[in-house]
Length: 408
Image 1 (cartoon, rainbow, N blue to C red):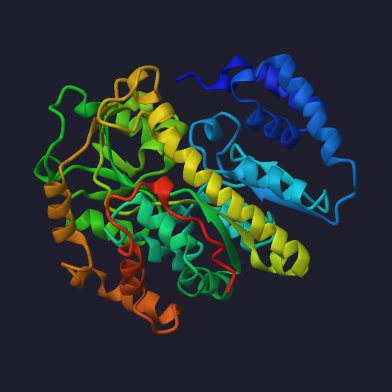
Image 2 (cartoon, rainbow, N blue to C red; image 1 turned 60 degrees about the vertical axis):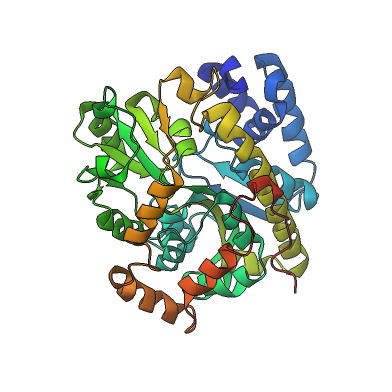
C-alpha cells in the first residue's frame, strides 16, 4: 500500500518545512492521509503554524523522536505526532512541542540518556534500546512473559503498571513513561535465506547468527534458543543481512517496514518471543515542573495516544506492512517479497519451554533478583506474567478495554 507521504518529494517537503517549520509540517502531514499533495500540505502546514503560534507557550518541550519522521510514522502508527498535536491543542498552546526526529538530536540508543541529561524533554525509542540507559526497562523483556499483543496493552493500561513499571522508572531513572506501541519480536532473516524453504521449526534456526538490540534479557532468550545474539551497529546491520554475514536480526515486522529493512529481509519468522515496545517517555523532572493542571493534560494526551496506537498500528500491521502469512498486494512485504513464516503454536510452545523463566529459570536468576530489588522486593516477572494472562489468549488487541492507569 503506497504511503500518502510518497505523493510529496523530499525536496518539496523540505521547502514547505523551511517556510512553516518542521513540527507544523509534520503534524500537518500526519493529518492529511490520502488527500496529501504538495499544495494541500503547504496549506495545512501554514494553518498549523498559525494555530500553534496564536499564543505564547508557558513551556516549550523538545521531543527527541530518534529516527521517526513523517514517512516511517505513516508505516508504523506509534502515535508520536498524534501525541504532540493533541497535547498542544489540549493545553490551548500552553505547551508547545518541538518535534525533532530523523535522528536529528538523538538516536535509538542515546535518546534516553539525552532526556536524563536535559538535552531533550520527551523521547521515543524502543524500550529494548533504551534499557542501556534505563536498565529497569529490562522488566519488559522476559521471554514469553506476554502471550499476545493484547496482553501487552492489557498490562500497560492496568493500574498495577504504576507500581510495577512507572514508579520505579521515576525513582531510578527520572523518566515518566507515557505510552507505547506494542508488538512481539521474531527473527527477520536476511537474503542468505532467500532461496531456503520457509522456516517451520526451531531446529532450522538453531546456530544462526542474529543481530540483537540493546536488551540484556533478550540476549538471554536468544542464547537459550541457539540464536547467537551479536551486537552489531545499526548502520552495519543492513549490509550484514544483504551480504549474508548475519543470518537475521531480532525485531518486529513493522520495524522491518518503517526502518527500510524490507529489501534485505527474505523471511519474517513470527517467533513472538519477547516484547517489542516503541515507547514515548518524558523527563520526570520536566513533567514535575509543569504543575498539576498541565501534568493532567499530558497524561490525558498520553492516554489518547495509547488508544490511537492500539487501533491504528494494529490496522497498519496488516494493511500497510503485510505482517501476515499471505501479505495483501501493495503492502511493504508483498512489494519486497518478504515471506512470513507464521510458525505453529506447537513450535512457539517448544520455544517457550526452552527459554522462558517459567520453564528454564536458571539463566534468568541474576537479572530477576536485580530487577526484583529495584521493584521494591516484589517478584516482577511473576506479577507481570500473571496480569498478562488475565485475558483470553485469543483476545484481539483492538478489543482490550482502555483505562486511565494513573487514576486511583
